[in-house]
Length: 348
Image (tube, rainbow, N blue to C red):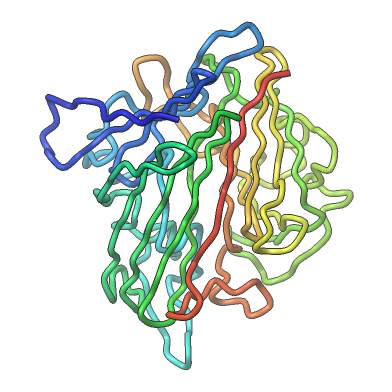
């Protein structure tokens, strides 16, 4: 695997950088240090044609434009300090209540309005025995967005010759604090200007966390006989009319033990033959089908319309700091956040 830095002669923010990861299969992954964001993933279809399979802007600085950040859809970003929602922007830890900034109605979402998605991360290319790795680092100071503790974050991106994009997350804190890091890429395996409703998805989850107004009620219930049962391949659009908002934006409980790298999902697009497998060490995954994409944003090839991409956000459960029955997302000096997500690309 090889990494090259792409020259950006016209950027206004000179600290902005862009990197291209390539492997022996001609797969290309482009990542900017703005938000440690995946801007492009190009893979071959069954005919050998290379196309982009994620939604992303043409230029890095669009990810920190005032317009975009004012109505952010987190395209491809590393989100944190806490991915997903925290109810009413507050939680209690060790007997103290912490108040966070609200940026999603009455809730705190994806680390708040100045979360990791818009930070300019430090970046370096590291040589390893397996090949080159792209390393992004960031320091989140004590009280940032209301969170306790200084947190040192490292995200490592490695593209294998087996077409696996391996993302390793590590976060060290000097005091107990919630941490929940994920990648927010929107996938469309067709590589074309079309929606994802005919994509077929399988999710390895026997349970999910029901919600009211996007906040889990605290229960963990079976997926069987619900629209959230993806034990067999189902088309994304097949059961939307069975859902309250006719869209998926829900946390599923991935089968197996937290800490073990296990398969969370498979998605495939019949026409192109492309398949995506998702693996994670985290306990949950948000399956989101791009309901709130409304065409406001796009690139030179397409508008990002409703259902034009879907996300597989591996995670601790939404609002988990407020639910003791959920797996703990609390990081301490002796218990760092140390998790892996793998996106594997194949063709059928």
